[in-house]
Image (cartoon, rainbow, N blue to C red; front, top):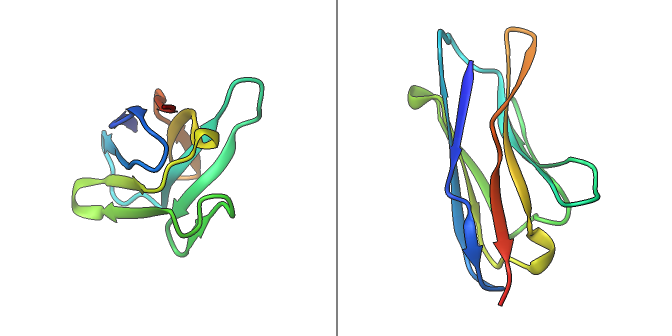
Length: 112
């Protein structure tokens, strides 16, 4: 399984971005897909995950929305009301066939 993320960039505080991540390879159905992020000097943390249930980090609840197109094996992260603290490298994640897969990361910078 290969994960290709896109959609990062520079945005002002209060702005919005939409991340996309497409999975490719010989895939039947991915169990869980989602997003993690890692800021400089910090550990990687869960942002949002969807599969049997949907979970969000407390820090993004009400601002970020995860969605998924199973037909395209693609997961999206709509990020609204962005804050400087959201600045991180965002990594796409998939759990499939008892293995974890990671995308290459896409940088989101929230700054005026």
